Length: 200
Image 1 (cartoon, rainbow, N blue to C red):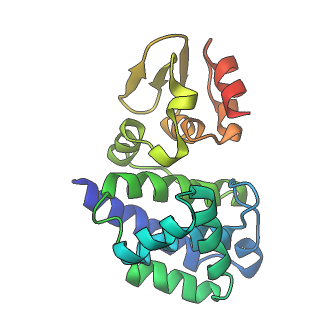
Image 2 (cartoon, rainbow, N blue to C red):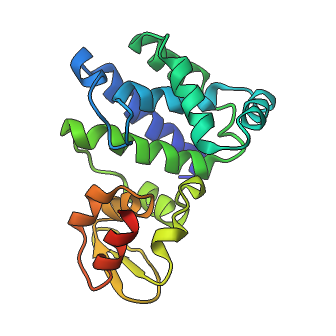
């Protein structure tokens, strides 16, 4: 399956999850510091913005990823949860058509940001997981956490890097790469101490 197909399936799984959430779950904390579940979905609406508009907002935010995301989340607070899902389902694809690998990484990580605190685990297909392991979200600056370490997934056929080893489930490696400290507890190897320090 190509990356666009993987992205479509990843989105469909997230949409199915979101439609099943209770009001309480929508207001629950996610793994993104300071963001509730609904805020994570509000952030994902960046993919519903036309590219010229996206660029204009980015410039007005001084090209700051944090300010850009904060503006999106704040704007989304006016929407009902149903409207958030409808917009994500029917209007997404305006930005990601130019960078589907980046979008796949973003949607996968944020889906886990939502699922993990809610206790709604899922198996991630190996092809999607390997694609994101190879191409994590660059905006999360994964190289700050991965340089000088060797990562080995124990549930899919993937490894990368050199140095002290970090091994464990591919999903936990992806999340640790982008700074989710909670996932480091699921990893093992002599490189884990350094990885934990970097995620702190």
